[in-house]
Length: 321
Image (cartoon, rainbow, N blue to C red; front, side, top):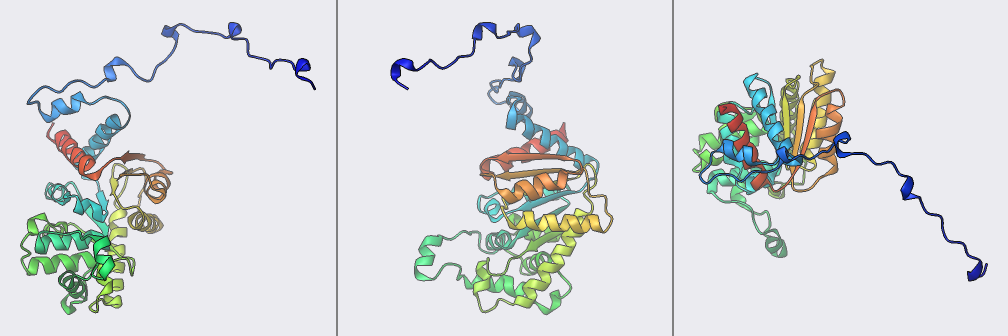
């Protein structure tokens, strides 16, 4: 076909489209939802009122209200956390929640308690991985490994789980920075803190004091303890995952299956995930699959050192209101 024979493409006739007046149409955003400048020297209530009632800000306030309501109604509130939460200095906020009776159970993986133990004993944690890997010194802290490995293999701790063994040992040695340790305070407050270990993932597994039997025995007992606590997640309960991308979402899903298999009414609770990026396992195993039989789910993306203090403050504000 020559260029002279080409016909122009057909176009939609916009003169025939139907239009509507604004009063007949809905809109998602209204001026009542807009942020308001917070007054100088304002209160937490003023801050909450200053937030836009849109998207994540609206959802975060809603979730804080749900957590506060769960506390008022003595519902189960389970927190799972990754090591980054401790490295960014947020342990004291979770300790405060435990002391106030907000958290009823807490779960983490090996890195979560390694950083916590170093804080409790030495007041510092988090090594330069690249630097240590270059000369083979990464993860070779004798003091850290020996303390944890010996705590979970201690003959007097045979009937204890991983978290309880470590907490007892920190209490027994009067850890210098115990006020900042989740493991210490959970043991002291008798809040179940469970540790779920994948062999070979933790620096303490590199050491001669590592005992596979002790690691497996104590971590498996902690799984059974967590499954028991998950069985308390009836309607109105809350479970939140703070920064664990793989291990805790996987452990939680299995614990939930056990709880339901044993006949517990672990349905219609609220789940939330807080992390810097969205991952597959938290999305599926914490948010979507557990709430298919009812309940609510919330996903918050942002830096832990900003989002968790915000949540902590909002929940306390709701409880004091």
